[in-house]
Image (cartoon, rainbow, N blue to C red; front, side, top):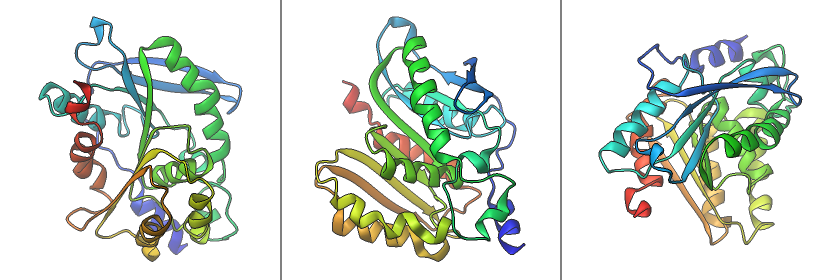
Amino acid sequence: MVLVAFIAMLASTAVSEPVLPHQTFTIDSNVLHETRRINVYTPPGYEKGERYPVLYMPDGGVEEDFPHVTADIDVAIRAGEMRPVIVAGIENTERRRDMTGPTRVEEDRKIATHVGGAATFRAFIRDELMPQIRKRYRGNGETAIVGESLAGLFIVETFFEEPKLFDTYIALSPSLWWNDQELVHRAGERLRSRPQLKATLYLAYGGDDDRGDAGKALAEVLRVDAPKELRWYYEPRPDLQHSTIYEGASPAVFRKLFPATMHR
């Protein structure tokens, strides 16, 4: 029961806040066997006809992280501090099912009735959501994904399982303790097997939540085994906590990974 309480404490707790103008559509998913709601932000000047990178985000409901992420991005774009991006937010149904991979650890399975659905959720994004976004919006072919906590775990798992699915992977306080740190333990061999991998991986942790030092351990593996063309970052944020890292870190992270100079 201790782990259940720990997860409950760390769960995303986005507060209701103003939501920028955006579009919403639904997908009747054949992969997930349910209807999924998608919220899409388009940047200032979108009507001019240019094409833009697409940032995908789990926890993308209007009562989740979509409002503060799009607000951060909109401010940065209008200030000329970040190049414009489209944001595709995926609203949750069973978050702990979708964000977790399989586990052999009994305590892990106590966090929810269903866990271990990450591969299916990834197939939904790859085979159903991304084609819809390409059809409906003017992406330029560049993609990124951002998430925190269990969503961060999903993003790191996706980086290792399908490293070409996105160009940029942003994981804030990812729950790498899952399944006895299996992703960390296998990271070295996976990185060495892909010497030509070209992508960006960003990791950050709040001061209270690198459980088992899993993030530090992954950073050390990256230091030793990262392919030459993998751009990676590990940034401890002792000034932030698990409950504040998304809103506290994301403004600087987006400006860093999508600098305005790259748009010119």
